[in-house]
Each structure stands twice: as structure tokens, then as C-alpha cells.
Length: 363
Image 1 (cartoon, one colour):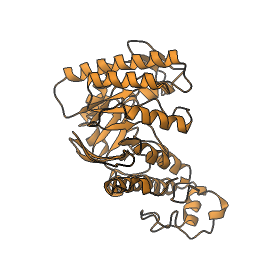
Image 2 (tube, rainbow, N blue to C red):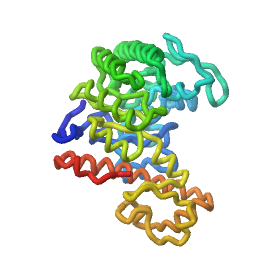
Image 3 (cartoon, rainbow, N blue to C red):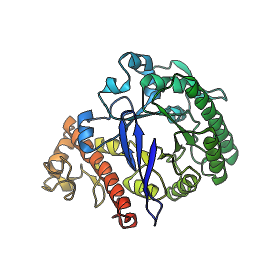
Image 4 (cartoon, rainbow, N blue to C red):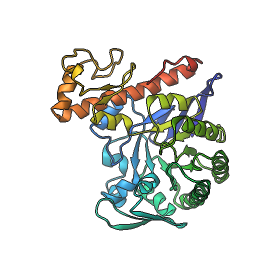
């Protein structure tokens, strides 16, 4: 399923290829986030044109609306949303974590109330697998228990071991179904405690997963601490399986984490920032609403080859944003996603060339 094609001798950055039923994915890879079966403000055809290879959708949101069985009857998530490439679905563990006053965690699973209408549900590791099976995603994530930062060692240990028990149950239930082309990934937990992360990784490896995610980060810890946890955790994971850092991050975070052995990323930052007028460039970000861009004829980034930078000025993009035109979100999203995907293309090229340490600093 996963081929490790090249490892940069100076840093340990990895170049690989992940095979799925809906196509091969060149890694390191960034996955645009399509939480509710859509990447906001952009069409699937445009995602393909920008070079997106895989997208992420969230089973928690799709379970609540329109319902996983509705999507199954529509031919699965690929058919439903008009995307023929690979899809990874998150189990909903992070979304349940964010509902702090609407959920209760037990050893069996999580009881929670819908943020939409208050209806009560009980999510178990087995149900999380069943939901993702109905969606038909290529990569299925186990249900995990995610903690905020800071967390006491006692709480982190209890949460991690609960997550490992859930991972074992997820694996058993996944294996009990009819054989399919789906792949199941485990999620390493343990907060910022190296020994707990090491124990978590060892237990997941013993259970055996097609890939391993590093979860429970970007939840409030300092960036240097996050990098340390990523480096320590990646070193515990099998060389021949993909490594996925969940919910991270800035372009600089991607480069730093690839240098620490990570292969896969997702984050809402490029699309959410686009809708808020925050645009990425090689010289640092641009807040397009600022008055200084009112008559600026330049593109967002003179070195960018995206369709937006080839055609539109900062002055026009500012006009769209301050006028609250829908096209503002669309064009900004195209640029930001291109910037992220192009950053990954450059990363792959520099690894292949054994020059990863020479990669220009990305902000």
C-alpha cells in the first residue's frame, strides 16, 4: 500500500507513494479539508486542476447531516460529492472533543448531543467504523479520545489508554466486515509526554494498522513543543507505513514536520484564512482588507503561478473582500490552496534531489 521511495540523508524527510482504490497519492501530501462533503468555496474540478490528490471529510458531521445511510444509498461519498480521487475520513473524535459541554466520555464510547438540534447520540469505536464504511472512504480513522493542552500526566495516561482500547476494538470490528479496499489508520495519543507517546505507538503497532496518525496536537501547546512531540513520535513508528500529522498547520509547520518524518497533513487554515482575507505568499502573509492594497496593481505573490495571481490584482481582491462579494472567498481559496499544494510539490522535489535542507524558508 505504501512505497517509501526516498529518504533525505541529511534530515530524514521522506518521499513516498500511497496506493488506494481511487488512485496513488504522492507523499508528502497536503489534504484539503472538505468537512461536510465539500471543500468550501471551490469545486472538485478546480481542486484537481490545482493538484489536490486526496481530500479529508468528517464522518461526525456527515453522520449528523445528511446521515451516512443517505450517502450510502447515493452511491457513497465519492459519488455524492463528485470527487473521484482518494478520500480520508476522520472518525469524529476531535469534533466530539470540541463539544466539551455537550459530551460525556466513558470506556464504552462517547455520548453527545448534536450541535445542530440537541439530539442525543452514542458514538462507539465500532459505530465510527460502520459510518466510514457506509461513506466508502479510502482511509478510515479509528475513534480516539483527544485532550486539550495542558493535560496532567494522569489524565493523559487514562485518555491514551482509552484510545488504545478503542483502536483495538476498531481493528477487530474493521476485520469482522466483508473485505474491502478501505485502509484503517491508528492514532497515537499521549499529550506531550514522550513515554506515553512511545507506549501508544507500541500498542498501535502491535495491533497493526495500514498507517499511523499523530493526534492530539495543535490543541494549545507551544510550537517548539509540538515539533518535539512529532519528532519523538515519528521515530517510534514503522518505516514502511505512512505517518499522518492531524490538523497541522502553517506552511512552515509542514516543512518542519516533513523534516521530522511526517508524510501526510490536513488543516482548515488555507481555506478558512482565505474566507477571512488572509492570503499566503512567499514573502509572508497578506491581509487583503488593509487600505494599503486599495490601488495595488500587483498580484498576491509575483512568483506564484496560480490562476488568481496570473490574472487578478491585490486592488481587485481587496475590492471583492470589502464588498463582501462571494467571488472573494472563491479566488482567495484557489490561491491559498495552490500555495499549500505547491509547497508540497517543492518539498517532494527537494527530497528527490537530496536538497531538502536547501528548501527556501516558507512562512
